[in-house]
Image (cartoon, rainbow, N blue to C red):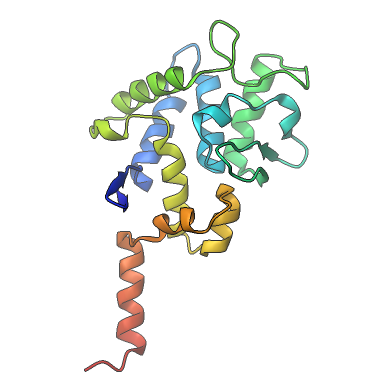
Amino acid sequence: MVRNNDVTIKYFTQNEMKKLLDAITSSDGKHAIRDLAIFRAAYRCGLRASEVSMIKLENYNSKKGELFCNRLKGSKSNTIRLDEKTKQAIDDYIEHYDITNSYEILFKSQENKPISRQTLDYIMKKYCKEASIEDTSKHHFHAIKHTTAVHLAESDMDIKELQWWLGHKAVSNTEIYFQFTTRQQEKMYAKLEEKSEMV
């Protein structure tokens, strides 16, 4: 976890995120195909629940493997290139449900309405339980956005690149994710050992 003005930001470790996605992949639930596409898209792009519910078929370019992310709360919308697993999950979902209307909302509830934050939080709790992720403070959908940000920060993406990826208008909103994780601390100490003239 990281802190922002004494507010704790909860996120999944790399191992926890893998366990969560594996739990969805191995699920025999009737919405597993939809859920995998949602969770992979949200994780790849760093999406809020409200942003997931707004995605339309026209926002997804299957040929290029790109997703236009319509960001809310004052963030800047952008287009993210998807990794192969995320693209495959979305393609499988679209094919399974035979979605063809460009203006159609992509991810829907059982009532055929845009999927709600409450539903996303509910299925998050379900899959966290199946993945044996015991820290219940992480069992809400918004943890995925924080997880994306921290994992990208750990991957050596610089702060301006991460700011663009997440759609932040102010870099101050991005800085929180560069508070030192274990991996970043190890890199910091390695630099110190290699180059420092401290005695």
